[in-house]
Image (cartoon, rainbow, N blue to C red):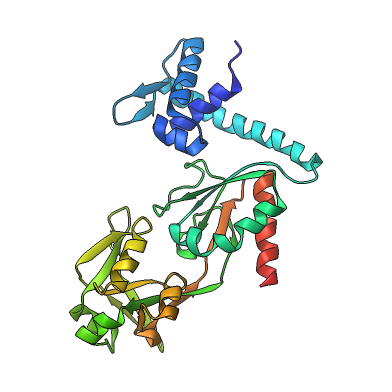
Length: 302
């Protein structure tokens, strides 16, 4: 029995992602194309591999068994094909990175254009996601995370600025009307613009000065989902809605032009910058290896 390798890859993508649309996003293909590929595999094998409902796609017992055997086999196939890259002047192929929105905005613009210019045969896909999913399960080669979110068995490489700060800011008009806080606890008496992760968790505001750490859980008229609606929060702060807290680098243009004013700047907390991380127990594909080396050189030049 001869089954097309692309059809088997389609089955693995759908089974891992838990759906045809999710699998399509992970592979950059169409949901209908994946569905047809899985149907062909099932027809050739004569057994149902996936239980389909309106809400989810779950492997059958036969599908789970096939997935367990196919995953390492297809990984070996990818590794074997990647060896060809060693005979090229420059690596070629696809590279998929899972990154938080903050990294896509604040870290990657200083790296990606030069990287793609140096490696024109690499096709790079950036998946901006603040859900902090497992990068491999999401069909990505590597991810960017901050140190508290690094997964086990991963190799971490510094990427971007090594020190960052969380900043609090508001429009001068708001502060003229409501006063300027002297201590983080004063924020409890102010209108604050809050952020919520996609998981539903609210973000506590944390400040630090001379070894004293203060955490506050302020309230306010606006809550936005982190990443997806952060620019809305910035616009609202500029319009005078309240005080917000965000990466200093994100707010810096507005602080410099005066549309936002720093709040509690001596209390702004400093933290280490992000890391590019990837699985240490797998052969590193040539496009990812090129990106890792490029990031290391870029960091040394700073």
